[in-house]
Image 1 (cartoon, rainbow, N blue to C red):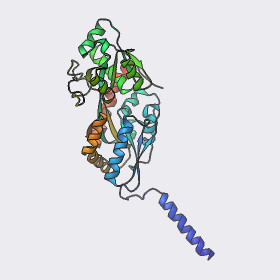
Image 2: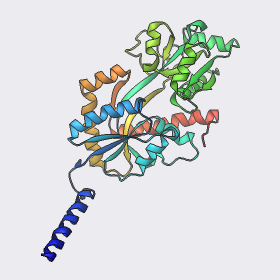
Image 3: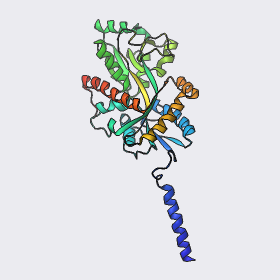
Image 4: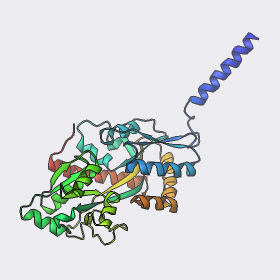
Length: 323
């Protein structure tokens, strides 16, 4: 009886170990829950999109998809965690173009773009240059004329090195003017100070300020993408308003560790294409002020590489570095 008990116990222990161990090589993917790491706190754009994707992917792949917030260091903590994770498709990042910006911005970074690979781009959001109505700034030409006449115009951002800050620096670079940067601890305080008349301008995410433009509390000067936004169709793009070639948006995509197998990435990318093409996903994104924009894995990699070069030039020009 004692020998039998030991055998039973051994079998039970082996079964438990097997249940906890990773799936055997060659097992069909996916066969266990997937973690979507959001490298920012709950409530922001990455988090909103990550939670929408988790619902859609769970339906498409028939496994649980869990959002895990790993915030800190401008997104670097969460992205580094994913870059160093087992490359099996079960640990992914929901990242923005901050991932490509940070490789030039930070002196000590736990990842580089070669340690990651794109799975798919899923969404995009534009910025909107807004002004307090008391400034009487209503167009890009008004802004340029004021600065060239010697007026100092301050613009607020969520902080140095954020896409909003770099959007303004790209504007400076392409127009030859200099808007004075006022960094805040987050978008909310920057927008509040434009509303209050303490600073004149902000490049802010479109969803955050479109309601204020519609209510007349802000003058909407120009959007920063290639095309006008359905949210504010009467507001021109910066390029239309006299700065040819100007473009700055934030994209959102899913990333995996660099060594993740091609077939796993394709399974994930195809599932994301189905999610992003669904009317329910597109409607929900539109409600939040984002635009659905799918790109497959190879195009996502090319986009990240291009963005890294684009923003490195701006960051180096202004001598910006974060330790």
